Length: 226
Image (cartoon, rainbow, N blue to C red):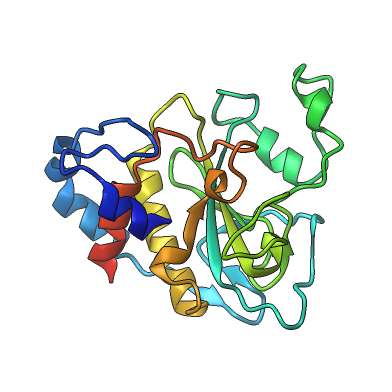
């Protein structure tokens, strides 16, 4: 959880989960510019469940949430397709069941999967939405969160285009912070300590968003918007 990571983080920047130290100077140098950028308004349409600033790419991989399930958690993921490569169409193709198994050897292993996320933040900060926020995207898999299984029932899944091996882009942190602010406003049961990485809810099975995701910096940006 984000709040727990912040309490445990060293002043210099590393967290006990990652063991990785992140340079703070680059964030300080761009503080004012970043703050202006992330304060831009983001708009949600509750009728459609869509964020107006997102490019909508409709996925079929979703269904209705159970009637008694409030949205209570935000799950941060990371994905790159092919693995370690950025900017291609593989992620959208996977979530839309159109991945060509002949395009890359790895695709033959995953092309039959029926998975999705509500949102994707590209390396350049572009926001893509696949599933309305009030519907159940198929992103968490076998997992446990807030003492419950069936995490998809009560969570929103956000993918960052990235991998375990490379730092994320500053614009991705900015967009994720702004998106988190909007989501928490629309779904107030998502408290700050209800924000998890995929690895938190599926330990041993998943590693994303990985050791290069700077939870402390993300939480700092969220606090600036509070």
